[in-house]
Length: 269
Image (cartoon, rainbow, N blue to C red; front, side, top):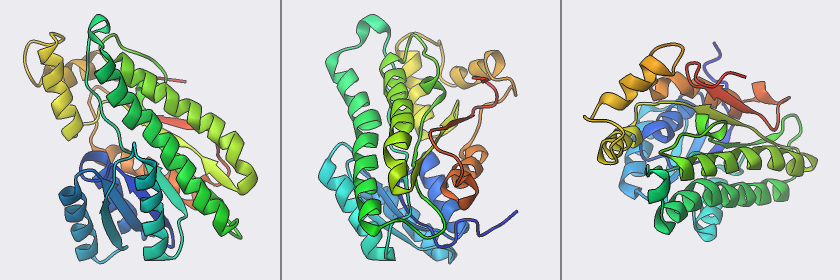
């Protein structure tokens, strides 16, 4: 396998303080990329950047950003360009979930999830595309915008409907954005993880007990692995980082408007 498939790529990554965002940032750098990593948790992304720079592969810079704020998205793009000379890839990973049964969904729950997961992707796509367009098309390869979807971009469960709505919105932005941006030689593709053991899922597991979906913490992932995942195990960030890197690399040049499922066989197409 090419261990430098992202050499020369300058990548902005949102939601990179932990979980899949942090794992992808470290993997992209190991594949030769320079990464500008943002998160509301500044200490977290600074720690990730220190690990990357200490490993001596690609370079990393960190900043605090709130993806629901347009100015923060613009600042993250500008820092990428300032630090590395240009932006080639925007990897829009930031996301949250807070399960509620349907009749318990309130405006605060809806707004929090939709603002981060959907509006945050829209703003990130727009600000990254604005910079890419101003740079002019690259000679050989298109720019890449990679929003992170979910299995819930293709289906819905009764206890996470706002999250499903937000991830359906991501799918719509992948398809619509691909059509809107190709004239500027920008592709838009995403990947859709399933049950991934990260800090987000650890909290989700607790939340599912709180709303009565499971009796004890730790049951949710095993239950889903047994009943829904064809491969009969949940995943870890290491299971999805290769697909993420592929979408950021030149190997995906002749793709746009696609959402790749990488979920162990929950949603089959």
